[in-house]
Amino acid sequence: MFDEVNGINSVLLIIIGFMNVFTFSIYYLDKRRAVKRKYRISERTLLLSSFLFGGIGGWSGMYLFRHKTQHALFKYSLPLAAILTLGVIYLLVTQDISSLF
Image 1 (cartoon, rainbow, N blue to C red):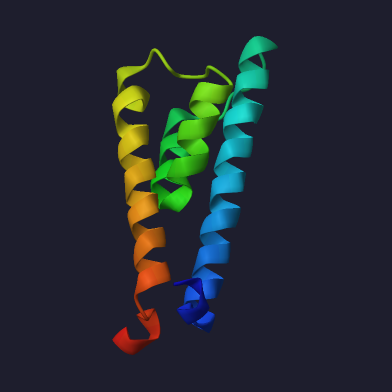
Image 2: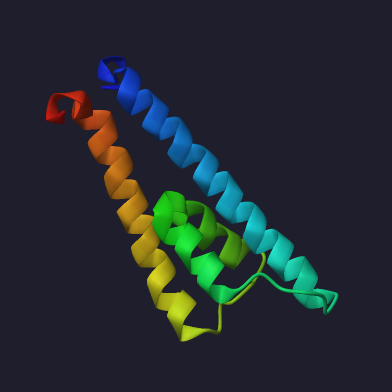
C-alpha cells in the first residue's frame, strides 16, 4: 500500500506530519503558559491548527497534557479534527492525488 504513494502525496503527508507536531507543541506551550499564568495562545489558534490537519496532534496534546479537556468545544471538536486528519491521510495513502490535476 505504501509503495504506491507518489511524490505529491508524500509531500502532503510530510506537511500533515509537521502540522501535527506543530499543533501538539502549541498545546504543550499553552499548557505551560497557563500554569505559569503568562500570555496564552488563543483558543481560536489552537482549534484552527487542529482543523488544518493537525487534529491528531491536537487531540493527543489535549489529553496528554490535560489541557482544555473540560471545555465542551474542545472535547467534541478535537476528535472530529482527528478523524478529518486521519481521513485525509487515508486518502493520500490510497489514492493518487496527482490525477486530480
